[in-house]
Amino acid sequence: MAELDRTDVALLRLLQKNVRSANKELAYAAGIAPSTCHERVKRLWASGTIKGAKLVIDPAVLGYDLEALFMIELAKHERKEVDSLLDHVSTMIEVRSSFLITGRYDLIVHVVARNTEHLKNIAFDHITCHPAVTRIETSIVYDARSQDNLLDDIS
Image 1 (cartoon, rainbow, N blue to C red):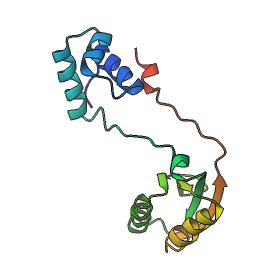
Image 2 (tube, helix red, strand yellow; image 1 turned 30 degrees about the vertical axis):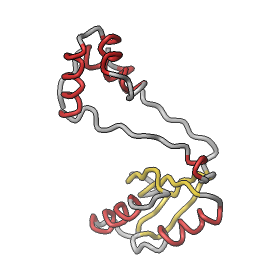
Image 3 (cartoon, rainbow, N blue to C red; image 1 turned 180 degrees about the vertical axis):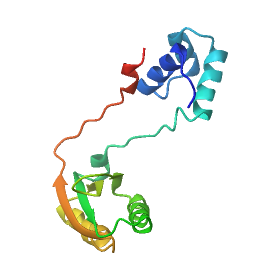
Image 4 (tube, one colour; image 1 turned 60 degrees about the vertical axis):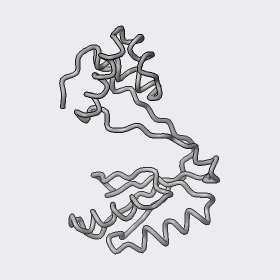
């Protein structure tokens, strides 16, 4: 990973607040020339410091009124089986994120669904039918918050 100086951190903070900021706006806010800003941002992308930018759509606008977490226990912890399940869930449009974890469960999958019937179908048709899965526990998400403040710890 590349070493970050104050200007890099300032640019990252600005981009984290608004990834659509124009180069001139970023340069002005960071106190650098637009050409320097452009080169620095390009370097942050090339080094892998910035891994991506994405559009986040409210699932409810598309008719997905329900969010849930599937806590999944696996029958086997063989890499091939685990990778197969992770690959499978990553192709599902209803899956927002998945986490291979330690502890009581092996995998947590965050999904969206249109209603409880749709949620049940996701669980039965796509999760519990996978040979690696032995048990699934479902929790409905009432509210969710996320944060992007890793840079708060860097001066």
